[in-house]
Image (tube, rainbow over all chains, first blue to last red):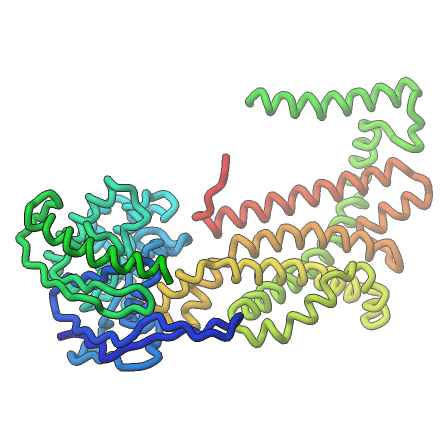
Length: 254
Length: 251
Protein backbone atom coordinates (compact mmCIF):
# COMPACT_ATOMS: atom_id res chain seq x y z
CA UNK A 1 0.00 0.00 0.00
CA UNK A 2 1.40 3.40 -1.02
CA UNK A 3 -1.12 5.87 0.22
CA UNK A 4 -4.10 5.66 2.56
CA UNK A 5 -6.93 8.10 3.04
CA UNK A 6 -8.61 7.79 6.44
CA UNK A 7 -12.04 9.35 6.78
CA UNK A 8 -11.00 12.35 4.71
CA UNK A 9 -13.38 15.29 4.39
CA UNK A 10 -13.04 18.67 2.72
CA UNK A 11 -15.18 21.74 3.19
CA UNK A 12 -14.94 25.05 1.34
CA UNK A 13 -15.86 28.36 2.85
CA UNK A 14 -17.54 30.63 0.38
CA UNK A 15 -16.51 34.12 1.46
CA UNK A 16 -19.28 35.91 -0.40
CA UNK A 17 -22.18 34.12 1.28
CA UNK A 18 -20.42 32.89 4.41
CA UNK A 19 -21.59 29.38 3.54
CA UNK A 20 -19.72 26.21 4.27
CA UNK A 21 -19.94 23.72 1.44
CA UNK A 22 -19.01 20.11 2.00
CA UNK A 23 -17.06 18.83 -1.02
CA UNK A 24 -15.85 15.49 0.31
CA UNK A 25 -17.09 13.34 3.17
CA UNK A 26 -15.77 10.24 4.89
CA UNK A 27 -13.41 9.07 2.15
CA UNK A 28 -11.50 6.00 3.23
CA UNK A 29 -9.40 4.52 0.46
CA UNK A 30 -6.10 2.67 0.03
CA UNK A 31 -3.99 3.08 -3.08
CA UNK A 32 -2.11 -0.15 -3.81
CA UNK A 33 1.21 -0.31 -5.64
CA UNK A 34 0.92 -0.85 -9.38
CA UNK A 35 -2.81 -0.42 -9.74
CA UNK A 36 -4.69 1.74 -12.24
CA UNK A 37 -7.23 3.30 -9.93
CA UNK A 38 -10.10 5.24 -11.46
CA UNK A 39 -12.00 7.91 -9.57
CA UNK A 40 -15.31 8.14 -11.41
CA UNK A 41 -18.12 10.53 -10.66
CA UNK A 42 -20.40 13.27 -11.93
CA UNK A 43 -19.10 16.81 -12.35
CA UNK A 44 -18.73 18.60 -9.04
CA UNK A 45 -18.42 15.44 -6.94
CA UNK A 46 -15.08 16.54 -5.53
CA UNK A 47 -12.95 13.95 -7.34
CA UNK A 48 -10.46 16.57 -8.49
CA UNK A 49 -10.28 17.93 -4.95
CA UNK A 50 -9.55 14.42 -3.72
CA UNK A 51 -6.70 14.19 -6.22
CA UNK A 52 -5.28 17.52 -5.05
CA UNK A 53 -5.37 16.25 -1.46
CA UNK A 54 -3.42 13.16 -2.55
CA UNK A 55 -0.91 15.47 -4.27
CA UNK A 56 -0.52 17.54 -1.12
CA UNK A 57 -1.72 20.64 -2.98
CA UNK A 58 -4.79 20.85 -0.72
CA UNK A 59 -5.05 19.97 2.95
CA UNK A 60 -8.02 17.87 4.09
CA UNK A 61 -10.45 19.59 6.50
CA UNK A 62 -10.86 16.39 8.47
CA UNK A 63 -9.40 12.90 8.51
CA UNK A 64 -5.86 11.96 7.61
CA UNK A 65 -3.69 11.00 4.68
CA UNK A 66 -0.99 8.42 5.35
CA UNK A 67 2.03 7.32 3.39
CA UNK A 68 2.90 3.92 4.86
CA UNK A 69 5.90 3.27 2.60
CA UNK A 70 8.92 5.54 2.99
CA UNK A 71 9.74 7.21 -0.33
CA UNK A 72 13.49 7.48 0.22
CA UNK A 73 13.57 11.25 -0.33
CA UNK A 74 11.96 11.04 -3.76
CA UNK A 75 8.55 12.46 -4.45
CA UNK A 76 5.60 10.16 -3.90
CA UNK A 77 3.19 11.75 -6.36
CA UNK A 78 3.23 13.79 -9.55
CA UNK A 79 0.24 15.37 -11.20
CA UNK A 80 -0.91 15.53 -14.82
CA UNK A 81 -3.44 18.32 -15.28
CA UNK A 82 -6.37 18.45 -17.68
CA UNK A 83 -5.19 21.75 -19.16
CA UNK A 84 -1.61 20.37 -19.53
CA UNK A 85 -0.15 23.22 -17.42
CA UNK A 86 3.02 23.31 -19.54
CA UNK A 87 5.27 26.34 -19.13
CA UNK A 88 4.81 28.23 -22.42
CA UNK A 89 8.29 29.79 -22.20
CA UNK A 90 10.07 26.46 -21.92
CA UNK A 91 10.85 24.06 -24.72
CA UNK A 92 9.63 20.48 -24.49
CA UNK A 93 13.00 19.40 -23.10
CA UNK A 94 13.08 22.19 -20.50
CA UNK A 95 9.49 21.48 -19.47
CA UNK A 96 10.24 17.81 -18.89
CA UNK A 97 13.46 18.66 -17.02
CA UNK A 98 11.71 21.19 -14.71
CA UNK A 99 11.19 18.82 -11.77
CA UNK A 100 14.79 17.55 -11.62
CA UNK A 101 16.01 21.11 -12.24
CA UNK A 102 14.28 22.56 -9.16
CA UNK A 103 15.43 19.53 -7.18
CA UNK A 104 19.05 20.30 -8.02
CA UNK A 105 19.86 17.50 -10.47
CA UNK A 106 22.87 18.56 -12.62
CA UNK A 107 22.07 19.70 -16.16
CA UNK A 108 23.65 16.77 -18.03
CA UNK A 109 21.86 14.23 -15.90
CA UNK A 110 18.44 15.89 -15.96
CA UNK A 111 18.53 16.46 -19.71
CA UNK A 112 19.52 12.88 -20.29
CA UNK A 113 16.61 11.77 -18.12
CA UNK A 114 14.27 14.16 -19.95
CA UNK A 115 15.36 12.79 -23.34
CA UNK A 116 14.73 9.24 -22.20
CA UNK A 117 11.20 10.17 -21.09
CA UNK A 118 10.53 12.11 -24.28
CA UNK A 119 11.40 8.89 -26.11
CA UNK A 120 9.08 6.94 -23.82
CA UNK A 121 6.10 9.16 -24.71
CA UNK A 122 7.01 9.02 -28.43
CA UNK A 123 7.97 12.66 -28.84
CA UNK A 124 11.53 12.24 -30.08
CA UNK A 125 12.40 15.16 -32.37
CA UNK A 126 10.14 17.64 -30.56
CA UNK A 127 12.66 18.49 -27.82
CA UNK A 128 13.31 22.07 -28.96
CA UNK A 129 9.69 22.96 -29.73
CA UNK A 130 7.56 25.23 -27.60
CA UNK A 131 4.18 24.07 -26.24
CA UNK A 132 2.19 26.33 -28.59
CA UNK A 133 3.82 24.51 -31.51
CA UNK A 134 2.33 21.18 -30.38
CA UNK A 135 -1.09 19.57 -30.77
CA UNK A 136 -3.22 18.83 -27.70
CA UNK A 137 -2.25 15.17 -27.68
CA UNK A 138 1.45 16.03 -27.91
CA UNK A 139 1.11 18.53 -25.09
CA UNK A 140 -0.41 15.89 -22.84
CA UNK A 141 2.50 13.56 -23.71
CA UNK A 142 4.90 16.29 -22.58
CA UNK A 143 2.93 16.75 -19.36
CA UNK A 144 3.12 13.01 -18.73
CA UNK A 145 6.88 12.93 -19.36
CA UNK A 146 7.32 15.93 -17.07
CA UNK A 147 5.37 14.20 -14.29
CA UNK A 148 7.48 11.06 -14.73
CA UNK A 149 10.75 13.01 -14.55
CA UNK A 150 10.62 13.22 -10.74
CA UNK A 151 10.32 9.43 -10.70
CA UNK A 152 7.22 9.45 -8.46
CA UNK A 153 5.62 6.24 -7.25
CA UNK A 154 2.13 7.49 -8.01
CA UNK A 155 0.97 9.50 -11.01
CA UNK A 156 -2.18 11.51 -10.46
CA UNK A 157 -4.25 12.31 -13.55
CA UNK A 158 -6.95 14.98 -13.45
CA UNK A 159 -9.17 14.27 -16.49
CA UNK A 160 -6.07 14.39 -18.70
CA UNK A 161 -7.84 13.55 -21.96
CA UNK A 162 -11.01 15.59 -21.53
CA UNK A 163 -9.82 18.43 -23.77
CA UNK A 164 -8.82 16.14 -26.68
CA UNK A 165 -10.83 15.11 -29.71
CA UNK A 166 -12.26 11.59 -29.77
CA UNK A 167 -9.64 10.09 -32.11
CA UNK A 168 -6.68 11.50 -30.18
CA UNK A 169 -8.28 10.40 -26.93
CA UNK A 170 -8.44 6.77 -28.14
CA UNK A 171 -4.76 6.85 -29.10
CA UNK A 172 -3.78 8.45 -25.80
CA UNK A 173 -5.73 5.86 -23.81
CA UNK A 174 -3.66 3.12 -25.43
CA UNK A 175 -0.50 5.15 -24.79
CA UNK A 176 -1.36 5.56 -21.12
CA UNK A 177 -1.87 1.80 -20.77
CA UNK A 178 1.44 1.10 -22.50
CA UNK A 179 3.32 3.55 -20.27
CA UNK A 180 1.56 2.23 -17.17
CA UNK A 181 2.69 -1.28 -18.08
CA UNK A 182 6.22 -0.25 -19.08
CA UNK A 183 6.95 1.87 -16.02
CA UNK A 184 5.11 -0.21 -13.43
CA UNK A 185 3.94 3.02 -11.77
CA UNK A 186 0.71 3.40 -9.86
CA UNK A 187 -1.87 5.50 -11.69
CA UNK A 188 -4.73 7.33 -9.99
CA UNK A 189 -7.00 8.67 -12.69
CA UNK A 190 -9.94 11.04 -12.37
CA UNK A 191 -12.55 10.93 -15.11
CA UNK A 192 -16.26 11.40 -15.63
CA UNK A 193 -16.21 9.05 -18.62
CA UNK A 194 -17.62 5.58 -18.01
CA UNK A 195 -15.98 4.29 -21.17
CA UNK A 196 -12.58 5.49 -20.07
CA UNK A 197 -13.04 3.93 -16.65
CA UNK A 198 -13.92 0.55 -18.17
CA UNK A 199 -11.11 0.63 -20.75
CA UNK A 200 -8.35 1.67 -18.36
CA UNK A 201 -8.98 0.77 -14.75
CA UNK A 202 -7.97 -2.16 -12.59
CA UNK A 203 -10.25 -0.73 -9.93
CA UNK A 204 -13.04 1.81 -10.24
CA UNK A 205 -14.12 3.99 -7.35
CA UNK A 206 -17.54 5.44 -8.07
CA UNK A 207 -18.31 8.64 -6.18
CA UNK A 208 -21.58 10.26 -5.20
CA UNK A 209 -22.65 13.76 -6.17
CA UNK A 210 -21.78 16.50 -3.66
CA UNK A 211 -20.71 15.94 -1.03
CA UNK A 212 -18.46 13.35 -2.65
CA UNK A 213 -18.55 10.00 -0.91
CA UNK A 214 -17.53 6.58 -2.12
CA UNK A 215 -20.63 4.92 -3.52
CA UNK A 216 -19.12 1.70 -4.85
CA UNK A 217 -15.71 0.15 -5.55
CA UNK A 218 -15.49 -2.23 -8.50
CA UNK A 219 -12.53 -4.50 -9.09
CA UNK A 220 -12.04 -4.87 -12.84
CA UNK A 221 -10.34 -8.11 -13.80
CA UNK A 222 -11.30 -8.08 -17.48
CA UNK A 223 -8.41 -9.13 -19.76
CA UNK A 224 -6.70 -6.55 -22.01
CA UNK A 225 -7.02 -5.28 -24.64
CA UNK A 226 -10.55 -4.37 -23.69
CA UNK A 227 -13.25 -3.41 -26.16
CA UNK A 228 -16.33 -1.43 -25.26
CA UNK A 229 -18.38 -3.75 -27.46
CA UNK A 230 -17.24 -6.89 -25.61
CA UNK A 231 -19.95 -8.65 -23.62
CA UNK A 232 -18.28 -8.40 -20.20
CA UNK A 233 -17.27 -4.80 -20.82
CA UNK A 234 -20.79 -3.89 -21.90
CA UNK A 235 -22.23 -5.50 -18.78
CA UNK A 236 -19.88 -3.52 -16.54
CA UNK A 237 -20.65 -0.39 -18.50
CA UNK A 238 -24.39 -0.90 -17.99
CA UNK A 239 -23.98 -1.49 -14.29
CA UNK A 240 -21.82 1.63 -13.82
CA UNK A 241 -24.12 3.63 -16.06
CA UNK A 242 -27.10 2.88 -13.84
CA UNK A 243 -25.17 3.81 -10.70
CA UNK A 244 -23.71 6.96 -12.20
CA UNK A 245 -27.11 7.91 -13.62
CA UNK A 246 -28.59 7.99 -10.11
CA UNK A 247 -25.85 10.40 -9.03
CA UNK A 248 -26.27 12.67 -12.03
CA UNK A 249 -29.99 12.82 -11.26
CA UNK A 250 -29.23 13.68 -7.65
CA UNK A 251 -26.71 16.31 -8.69
CA UNK A 252 -29.24 17.97 -10.98
CA UNK A 253 -32.02 17.80 -8.38
CA UNK A 254 -30.00 19.48 -5.65
CA UNK B 1 7.65 44.04 -51.66
CA UNK B 2 3.95 43.37 -51.62
CA UNK B 3 1.22 45.56 -53.10
CA UNK B 4 0.52 46.77 -49.59
CA UNK B 5 4.13 47.95 -49.19
CA UNK B 6 3.97 49.83 -52.50
CA UNK B 7 0.79 51.61 -51.46
CA UNK B 8 2.37 52.65 -48.16
CA UNK B 9 5.45 53.96 -49.97
CA UNK B 10 3.30 55.80 -52.51
CA UNK B 11 1.30 57.42 -49.71
CA UNK B 12 4.41 58.82 -48.00
CA UNK B 13 6.25 59.81 -51.19
CA UNK B 14 3.13 61.37 -52.73
CA UNK B 15 2.40 63.55 -49.71
CA UNK B 16 6.02 64.69 -49.33
CA UNK B 17 6.21 65.49 -53.04
CA UNK B 18 2.96 67.51 -53.02
CA UNK B 19 4.16 69.36 -49.93
CA UNK B 20 7.49 70.22 -51.56
CA UNK B 21 5.81 71.43 -54.77
CA UNK B 22 3.19 73.52 -52.96
CA UNK B 23 5.87 75.32 -50.91
CA UNK B 24 8.10 75.92 -53.96
CA UNK B 25 5.14 77.23 -55.92
CA UNK B 26 4.57 79.76 -53.16
CA UNK B 27 1.19 78.32 -52.14
CA UNK B 28 2.36 77.62 -48.58
CA UNK B 29 4.30 80.09 -46.44
CA UNK B 30 7.53 78.31 -45.38
CA UNK B 31 7.39 80.21 -42.09
CA UNK B 32 4.56 77.86 -41.11
CA UNK B 33 5.47 74.79 -43.11
CA UNK B 34 8.99 74.63 -44.54
CA UNK B 35 9.53 72.31 -47.49
CA UNK B 36 10.73 68.76 -46.74
CA UNK B 37 13.99 69.25 -48.62
CA UNK B 38 14.86 72.42 -46.73
CA UNK B 39 14.20 70.62 -43.42
CA UNK B 40 16.47 67.83 -44.62
CA UNK B 41 19.11 70.43 -45.55
CA UNK B 42 18.89 72.03 -42.11
CA UNK B 43 19.23 68.63 -40.52
CA UNK B 44 22.36 67.92 -42.49
CA UNK B 45 23.93 71.28 -41.58
CA UNK B 46 23.17 70.79 -37.90
CA UNK B 47 24.57 67.27 -38.01
CA UNK B 48 27.81 68.48 -39.65
CA UNK B 49 28.20 71.30 -37.16
CA UNK B 50 27.73 68.78 -34.32
CA UNK B 51 24.82 70.74 -32.88
CA UNK B 52 22.20 68.06 -33.51
CA UNK B 53 24.28 65.01 -32.41
CA UNK B 54 25.19 66.84 -29.20
CA UNK B 55 21.55 67.72 -28.47
CA UNK B 56 20.56 64.08 -29.11
CA UNK B 57 23.31 62.81 -26.81
CA UNK B 58 22.33 65.16 -23.98
CA UNK B 59 18.67 64.12 -24.25
CA UNK B 60 19.45 60.43 -24.67
CA UNK B 61 21.55 60.50 -21.52
CA UNK B 62 18.55 61.83 -19.58
CA UNK B 63 16.11 59.45 -21.25
CA UNK B 64 18.27 56.37 -20.75
CA UNK B 65 19.04 57.04 -17.09
CA UNK B 66 15.41 57.82 -16.29
CA UNK B 67 14.21 54.81 -18.27
CA UNK B 68 16.65 52.36 -16.70
CA UNK B 69 16.03 53.49 -13.09
CA UNK B 70 12.28 53.72 -13.61
CA UNK B 71 11.85 50.39 -15.34
CA UNK B 72 14.13 48.50 -12.93
CA UNK B 73 12.13 49.81 -9.97
CA UNK B 74 8.87 49.15 -11.82
CA UNK B 75 9.73 45.54 -12.67
CA UNK B 76 11.01 44.67 -9.19
CA UNK B 77 8.10 46.32 -7.35
CA UNK B 78 5.58 44.97 -9.86
CA UNK B 79 6.81 41.38 -9.51
CA UNK B 80 6.86 41.61 -5.71
CA UNK B 81 3.43 43.22 -5.56
CA UNK B 82 2.03 40.65 -7.97
CA UNK B 83 3.47 37.73 -6.04
CA UNK B 84 3.26 38.87 -2.40
CA UNK B 85 -0.07 40.04 -1.08
CA UNK B 86 1.16 42.44 1.62
CA UNK B 87 3.51 44.22 -0.79
CA UNK B 88 0.55 44.83 -3.05
CA UNK B 89 -1.49 46.17 -0.13
CA UNK B 90 1.29 48.61 0.76
CA UNK B 91 1.71 49.81 -2.84
CA UNK B 92 -1.89 49.88 -4.04
CA UNK B 93 -3.02 53.20 -2.53
CA UNK B 94 0.11 54.96 -3.83
CA UNK B 95 -0.32 53.59 -7.31
CA UNK B 96 -3.99 54.62 -7.28
CA UNK B 97 -3.07 58.13 -6.08
CA UNK B 98 -0.02 58.88 -8.24
CA UNK B 99 -0.79 56.94 -11.44
CA UNK B 100 -3.45 59.41 -12.70
CA UNK B 101 -1.25 62.50 -12.08
CA UNK B 102 0.44 63.65 -15.30
CA UNK B 103 4.08 63.13 -14.39
CA UNK B 104 4.99 66.42 -16.08
CA UNK B 105 3.00 68.12 -13.29
CA UNK B 106 5.51 66.74 -10.80
CA UNK B 107 8.47 68.33 -12.62
CA UNK B 108 8.24 71.70 -10.77
CA UNK B 109 8.34 69.85 -7.45
CA UNK B 110 11.32 67.79 -8.55
CA UNK B 111 13.13 70.98 -9.66
CA UNK B 112 12.45 72.38 -6.21
CA UNK B 113 13.86 69.27 -4.56
CA UNK B 114 16.65 68.22 -6.92
CA UNK B 115 17.68 71.49 -8.54
CA UNK B 116 17.56 72.69 -12.11
CA UNK B 117 20.18 70.28 -13.50
CA UNK B 118 19.93 66.74 -14.82
CA UNK B 119 18.70 65.00 -11.61
CA UNK B 120 15.24 66.62 -11.59
CA UNK B 121 14.76 65.72 -15.27
CA UNK B 122 15.92 62.15 -14.77
CA UNK B 123 13.68 61.70 -11.72
CA UNK B 124 10.65 63.00 -13.64
CA UNK B 125 11.30 60.56 -16.46
CA UNK B 126 12.00 57.70 -14.02
CA UNK B 127 8.72 58.28 -12.17
CA UNK B 128 6.77 58.40 -15.42
CA UNK B 129 8.33 55.15 -16.61
CA UNK B 130 8.07 53.47 -13.20
CA UNK B 131 4.29 53.65 -12.93
CA UNK B 132 3.65 52.36 -16.46
CA UNK B 133 6.07 49.46 -16.00
CA UNK B 134 4.81 48.73 -12.47
CA UNK B 135 1.14 48.58 -13.45
CA UNK B 136 1.83 46.39 -16.49
CA UNK B 137 4.14 44.05 -14.56
CA UNK B 138 1.51 43.57 -11.86
CA UNK B 139 -1.12 42.87 -14.50
CA UNK B 140 1.26 40.34 -16.08
CA UNK B 141 1.76 38.48 -12.80
CA UNK B 142 -1.98 38.40 -12.13
CA UNK B 143 -2.60 37.03 -15.63
CA UNK B 144 -0.40 33.96 -15.08
CA UNK B 145 -2.57 30.85 -15.18
CA UNK B 146 -2.79 29.63 -11.54
CA UNK B 147 -2.48 26.01 -12.73
CA UNK B 148 1.13 26.79 -13.74
CA UNK B 149 1.93 27.80 -10.16
CA UNK B 150 0.25 24.62 -8.95
CA UNK B 151 2.21 22.50 -11.41
CA UNK B 152 5.49 24.12 -10.36
CA UNK B 153 4.68 23.49 -6.71
CA UNK B 154 3.72 19.90 -7.48
CA UNK B 155 7.03 19.36 -9.27
CA UNK B 156 8.89 20.49 -6.16
CA UNK B 157 9.71 24.15 -6.80
CA UNK B 158 10.29 26.35 -3.75
CA UNK B 159 8.69 29.78 -3.42
CA UNK B 160 11.90 31.45 -4.60
CA UNK B 161 12.15 29.07 -7.57
CA UNK B 162 8.52 29.73 -8.49
CA UNK B 163 9.27 33.47 -8.41
CA UNK B 164 12.28 33.20 -10.72
CA UNK B 165 11.20 30.32 -12.96
CA UNK B 166 7.45 30.88 -13.28
CA UNK B 167 6.35 34.37 -12.23
CA UNK B 168 9.17 36.28 -13.94
CA UNK B 169 9.00 34.56 -17.35
CA UNK B 170 5.19 34.45 -17.12
CA UNK B 171 5.00 38.21 -16.66
CA UNK B 172 7.69 39.01 -19.25
CA UNK B 173 5.35 39.72 -22.20
CA UNK B 174 3.41 42.22 -20.07
CA UNK B 175 6.65 43.72 -18.78
CA UNK B 176 7.61 44.45 -22.39
CA UNK B 177 4.26 46.15 -22.97
CA UNK B 178 5.08 48.35 -19.98
CA UNK B 179 8.59 49.05 -21.30
CA UNK B 180 7.25 50.09 -24.71
CA UNK B 181 4.73 52.47 -23.14
CA UNK B 182 7.44 53.68 -20.74
CA UNK B 183 9.82 54.46 -23.61
CA UNK B 184 7.16 56.63 -25.25
CA UNK B 185 6.51 58.35 -21.93
CA UNK B 186 10.25 58.98 -21.46
CA UNK B 187 10.43 60.85 -24.77
CA UNK B 188 7.39 62.96 -23.90
CA UNK B 189 8.84 63.84 -20.51
CA UNK B 190 12.34 64.63 -21.76
CA UNK B 191 10.85 67.18 -24.13
CA UNK B 192 8.76 68.81 -21.39
CA UNK B 193 11.63 68.93 -18.91
CA UNK B 194 13.93 70.50 -21.53
CA UNK B 195 11.67 73.45 -22.23
CA UNK B 196 12.56 75.27 -19.02
CA UNK B 197 15.77 76.00 -17.19
CA UNK B 198 18.15 74.20 -19.50
CA UNK B 199 20.73 75.05 -22.11
CA UNK B 200 21.08 71.76 -23.97
CA UNK B 201 19.12 68.86 -25.38
CA UNK B 202 16.76 68.14 -28.23
CA UNK B 203 13.77 69.66 -26.45
CA UNK B 204 15.77 72.82 -25.76
CA UNK B 205 16.84 72.98 -29.42
CA UNK B 206 13.26 72.66 -30.61
CA UNK B 207 11.84 75.16 -28.12
CA UNK B 208 14.53 77.74 -28.76
CA UNK B 209 13.94 77.47 -32.51
CA UNK B 210 10.22 78.02 -31.89
CA UNK B 211 10.90 81.17 -29.85
CA UNK B 212 13.04 82.51 -32.72
CA UNK B 213 10.27 81.56 -35.19
CA UNK B 214 12.80 79.31 -36.93
CA UNK B 215 10.28 76.75 -38.17
CA UNK B 216 12.89 74.73 -40.10
CA UNK B 217 14.75 73.94 -36.91
CA UNK B 218 11.50 73.21 -35.09
CA UNK B 219 10.86 70.59 -37.76
CA UNK B 220 14.38 69.21 -37.35
CA UNK B 221 13.59 68.68 -33.66
CA UNK B 222 10.21 67.09 -34.39
CA UNK B 223 11.65 64.71 -37.00
CA UNK B 224 14.56 63.75 -34.74
CA UNK B 225 12.17 62.99 -31.87
CA UNK B 226 10.21 60.82 -34.29
CA UNK B 227 13.36 58.95 -35.34
CA UNK B 228 14.28 58.38 -31.68
CA UNK B 229 10.79 57.01 -31.06
CA UNK B 230 11.07 54.60 -33.97
CA UNK B 231 14.56 53.51 -32.89
CA UNK B 232 13.49 52.74 -29.30
CA UNK B 233 10.46 50.81 -30.52
CA UNK B 234 12.68 48.70 -32.80
CA UNK B 235 15.19 48.14 -30.06
CA UNK B 236 12.55 46.97 -27.59
CA UNK B 237 10.90 44.75 -30.20
CA UNK B 238 14.24 43.15 -30.94
CA UNK B 239 14.93 42.65 -27.23
CA UNK B 240 11.50 41.05 -26.79
CA UNK B 241 12.08 38.68 -29.71
CA UNK B 242 15.41 37.61 -28.24
CA UNK B 243 14.19 37.15 -24.65
CA UNK B 244 10.70 35.78 -25.38
CA UNK B 245 11.08 33.42 -28.33
CA UNK B 246 8.00 31.49 -27.25
CA UNK B 247 5.52 34.28 -27.92
CA UNK B 248 3.35 33.63 -30.93
CA UNK B 249 3.47 36.53 -33.32
CA UNK B 250 1.20 37.13 -36.21
CA UNK B 251 3.07 37.73 -39.48
